[in-house]
Each structure stands twice: as structure tokens, then as C-alpha cells.
Length: 49
Image (tube, rainbow, N blue to C red):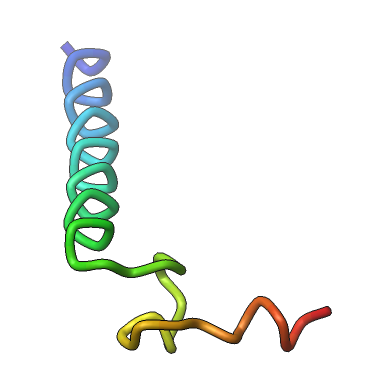
């Protein structure tokens, strides 16, 4: 029974992550999870180089 609960929790976490990524891409975010991804361009990747 514990295995089923653990599998359900992992499946729910993966499903929520996929949903978050899908929504961000749908809204046009180039850098998902980046604090400056709200705009049309993200320069954060250039700052780290």
C-alpha cells in the first residue's frame, strides 16, 4: 500500500511540473523559472557567460 501512495505522490509532482512548463511555454516564456522571463527577452543566460 505504501508503494502505491509513493507512486501517486511522484506522479502528481511530475504532472504538476509538466503543467507548469506547458503553461509557461504557452505564455511565451523563453527561460522557464528565470526571474526575468516575464518579458519578451531574457538576458540572464548572457550574464552568466
